[in-house]
Amino acid sequence: MADARILVVDDDRLIRTAIAERLERQGYDLVVAASLAEARAAVAKSSPDIALLDIRLPDGVGTDLLRELMAETDAACVMMTAHATVPLAVEALQLGAVDFVEKPFSFDRLDATLAAMLELTALRREVRALRARSGGPDAIVGSSPAMEEVLRMVERVAPAEGTTVLIMGETGTGKGLLARTIHRVSPRAHGPFVNVTCSDLAESLMESELFGHEKGAFTDARTMKRGLLELADKGTLFLDEIGELSTRLQAKLLRFIEEKTFRRVGGTRDMVVDVRILAATNRELEQEVAEHRFREDLYYRLRVLPIRLPPLRERRSDVPALAKAFLNDFLREFGKKIRRIDDEALEMLKAYAWPGNVRELRNVIERSVLLGDGPVLTAEMLPPELHGAGIPSAAQGFSMGPGGLDLETLERTLLLEALRRAEGNRSEAGRLLGLSRHQIRNRLKKFGVEE
Image 1 (cartoon, rainbow, N blue to C red):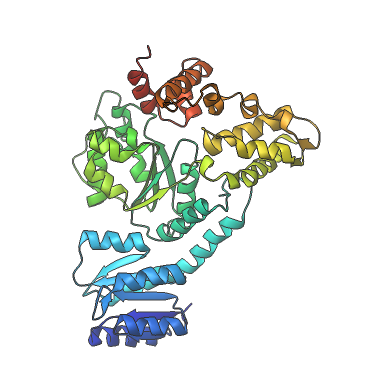
Image 2 (spheres, rainbow, N blue to C red; image 1 turned 30 degrees about the horizontal axis):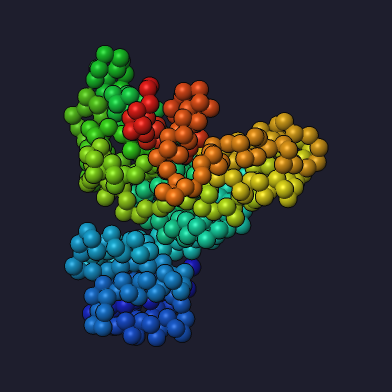
C-alpha cells in the first residue's frame, strides 16, 4: 500500500517538510496542512488513509480533527506532540487514535508507526467481516445499535496492541469471545492467546500460575515453572474476572503493566516479556475501588480503553439471529433434522429477560435441539421458564399499591427463588440472576438469609 494517502498536520514548517520529503521518497501520496482549516479542506477533497496530527495548532487542537476523522472516515490516526501528558495520551486513544508519538521522534520510529498503520486497513476489513458472519464458535452475532457500538470499539482498540482493554458486562454476555476477537484482529494475531480465570485458584496458586516460580520457591516447587505471562509473550493475556484478584496480586500486575517486567515467585531477577493485557469483569469496579477491594491505580490503568458489553435484554433484536446461529451449530453437532424456529418460539425467545444472557440462550437452544424432533423448533419445545413460569416473571405476584411496588421484597423473592432452583448453590443462583457470587453474598447478608 505504498500509494496510501497520508495527511500530515503540523504548524511547524520544518517538521512538515522533513516528513513530507521522506514519505514522498517512499512512494506515499502526501498532503500537508499547517492548521485545522487547511486540514479540513484537504479531507473534504479526499479522505486520507493515515493522518499524522499535531495536538497544538494555531486555530485549535488536533483532537477536534481526530473526532471528525473518526466519525466521517476510516483513517488511522496518530497524534504527535512535544507536550505529552498521560491524560492527553489517554484522551487521544479513547477518541480513536491508534498511536501517540512524542516529538522529536526518529524517522525509524515514524517508519515503524506507518507500517503498523498500513496493516490497520486489513484489520478493520476483517472486523467488518465479523459483522456479516453468523454461526460458528468464534462468531460475533448481532446488528443492534448496542452491538454496532461494541464492534466500532473493537475497530479502535484492536490495533492499539500495547494498550490495556477492560471489558465490562454481566455474566454470560460473551466477554471471553470479545477478547478473542480483539486478539484475532490485532497485530498480535499470530502470537498466543492465553486465558486465565482469576477466580479459579487460591491466591498462592494464582501467583505461581501468572508469574511462574523458581525451583525451591516453596515446598512443592521441585522444578522451575514458566508462568502465563511468559507463555503469552508476543501475544495476549486475557484476565477474566479480574475483580476476583487479591489486592497483593493486583499490585504485582500493576507493576508489570507499568514497567513491563516481573519476577517469578522466589526469583531475584526481572523478566521482560511483550504481552498485551485484556481484562474482563462482571463487577462494578468503581464501587469495588470505593470500598477498597480493588486498587484505584490498577483500575485506571486497565480502563484506558473500556468496552461495555450490553446484557441480552438490552439488545433483544439480536435474539433471533443468535438463536438461529446456535441452532445451526447444534444441528451440525447432533445431526438433528430441525431446520428452523417457528414465529411463536422466536417471539417467546425475544420476550424473555435472559438473566443468564447469551450463555443462557445458547443452553436453551441446545436443550431444545437435543430433546426436540421434527423439522421445526416450536414454542412447546422451549423450557418452562420461557412460558412465564421462571424467575423473570416473579414480579407478576406483586401488585402496584398506593405506595408503589416494594422493590426490596421483590428482590428478596427473586433471590430466594433463584437459590431454591439452584438447590442452594450461590454461583448457580448468581448465573440465573446475572449476578456474581460476591453480589449474591452481599444480598444474602442484606436480607438476613441464613447460609
